[in-house]
Length: 356
Image (cartoon, rainbow, N blue to C red; front, top):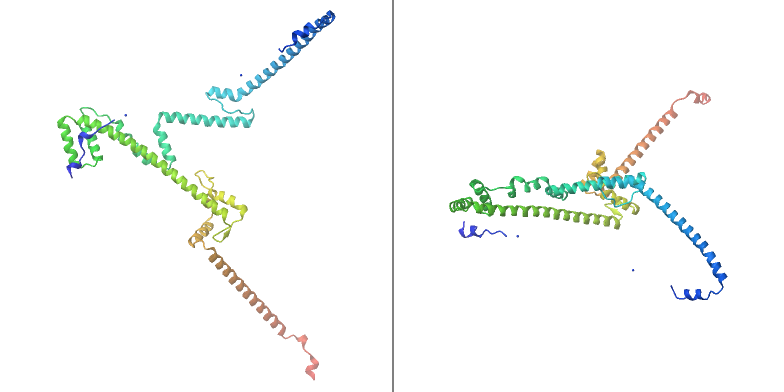
């Protein structure tokens, strides 16, 4: 090994919105009788207006009381429950069975989401694990990367723990690509110079940072892989939909236009608990004869023309065979009839002919 390619131990570095005229009208009034009439009429008008206002206010107060009562009734059904549990309602729910059912469903979902968020805040690794699994990753790979026993953030290096210091530095230099001979030499040098502890703590920091970078990269790569698979899957089913829409005959089988949409849903829409389509479920429930027929079609290259021709020849042969058998039966029946006709009958004997 070229010594020039070895790690320079001194190169380890770490960084962080009133009109006018009212007075003139009053001045033009000259007859006192008129003034008296006006004075007599004004109190009546004021009384009438006051009564109307009082009636209106009473009606409004009564209406408000009714509305308050309705609100109180509604609040006992939904609002008070939500307030008791500490939730805020974003929607209004009717005081019916359907309304209460919808209220309970929404409240349950909100409560579940809140519990999950609380869990994820307390245990971030749980959310990362779930995200990784939802992206198609495996638990084994995730726990291998997030194993607490190999997490260098959890490692404590004591100043007098020479064995731990050498172990950390050994793994650090091995990750750099150095052989064991060089590693042992450099560790001995560090220990002799009193630099083993400082160098090991620096190595621990770098390894921990590399582990975190690897974990983030692992999650990102799995998410990217999942998104790419989803994109390809979407493109595939778009192609299938276009093929069904633009064609009428597939490998000798004709599909009516009015059945195309339902047929596409049959083979593509997930309906099972694990994402199975109705086609998948029907195939699982099919008997062995149907499965063998489907498998044979696949084995034969799904060449329906050959299968149809073979079926037609078989039918034709069976028809010919049936005609031959039927004809033979008719011949036998005729022969039997003829034999019965040629049998001697004494009643048919002409005595006179014999005496001549």
